[in-house]
Image (tube, rainbow, N blue to C red):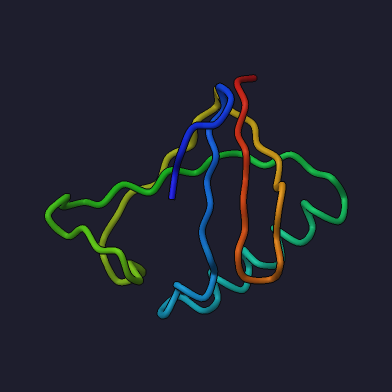
Length: 92
């Protein structure tokens, strides 16, 4: 879920929602933990569905999509409990 708080973008999600791509989920979990442990900045990656009619609120790992980055934002993982994570993005 994406929202805006105090002029910055906030993204919140949970890894347990990923029912398909287990390798990708586990890699993201590892990277989120590294960012928390080492206070690393993260970049925003935007997934866009190839066909917007394929929208889903569940696992979308099997739905074709493209990926891009937003070089204008840098983020900080502000919460991560191994499942639920929150990242706040700020303009560079």
